Image 1 (cartoon, rainbow, N blue to C red):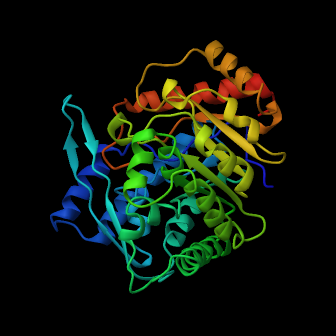
Image 2 (spheres, rainbow, N blue to C red; image 1 turned 180 degrees about the horizontal axis):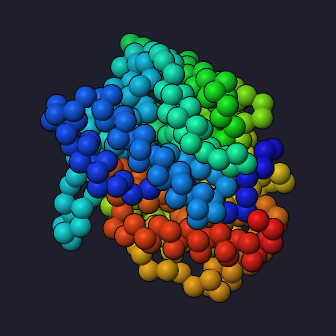
Image 3 (cartoon, one colour; image 1 turned 60 degrees about the vertical axis):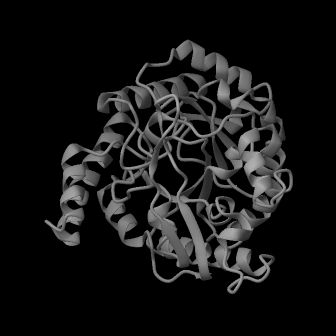
Length: 370
């Protein structure tokens, strides 16, 4: 198993600067070209790389500054995949929620072109020696969970096993190899689906789509392992579990227990970023399934709101987690990115710095070293 660059990390996305949002709006209206927008993105990425290095992070992302959504922008570039742009719905209590995007498989899934390579090459050119550039991509399970069998063409895939899962894994393997050739050694897959399967409402929705929520985590573990089997040697592959993060709202709640065994024991992933920022996540008991060699990054610091957590409280929670998984297999991070979509969370720019500094200082005090 590969080791993380440090005992502290982050999930990857950052609030977009105002000038980048303005440039995106201009591009949408046809007032600037894609090439002009890319130059603005380059500038914003260069600045967010410097910000991460100044804070003291060891793994560095591009903030997902070239994306609108953490998942759609990647998935729709796979051959055979079509996405319908999601809409915001207002809930009865007045809060907003992102209606899940409809992702449909309309043909055989394939790696039609390099998706992240050029973006990674620019990121790598901006990152200082000794730091690790990290690429974040959506989990392949996103192509199945939201629509289930009904979201996958019966003409292309009369049976899902094994052809659909094999084709998606091959497409992901091609992308990982392309990134590896460009020098990428750290990829994080963002997965909402396994966390959603901890929530009884989401489990019922899966049943309505014709899936068994008890069987799905095990099927997804096998699915992820097909991707892992294609991972180039020497590449760290992590997974982030997310219960929803759109504009500081959440979509799911529930203890990890229903998925813990499949997730931690059966899946051949190097590291897991697990949300533990509030009571929605339940207790640490599911960590008892963590085998030797793997790392769980405890997402104890929320990115949803600016209020800063107490360092002492964080240390107590890390010690509580260490009752179920060895301290040397734990690390610390914020619970999610600061901006899973272009809209960003309900948090100030300066809060990003404060939260990350808190993570780094706490981790250094708990585990020592850099």
